[in-house]
Length: 129
Image (cartoon, rainbow, N blue to C red; front, side):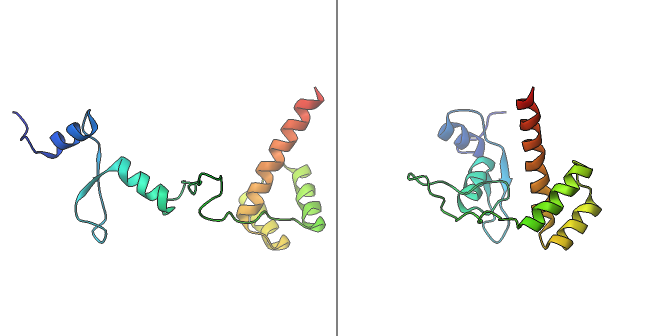
């Protein structure tokens, strides 16, 4: 069975020069029609609405959306985090909650600190060899 000359598949092949694109339905408030999934991902990445996509960088290297400022841990916070790291390199959910509450930090900050500290530990042990 031959496809209609102006079918969606024919238009996709002719405009892209290849096989038809996978299609994704756009939510009704935006538009009730089908849009190529790649175009939708590009649009989401450009406006920063989709998690997992970083903000676009302009020609000068500056972000279009300012990054969150770096967290500066206090000496007391670092001391407690280091003590906890010496006891156990991987933080569990209950310990993460306890540290976050005690140090007035978010659980995400605790998780990230432990990830970074494990990488630092790995570099130090590799350099010592």
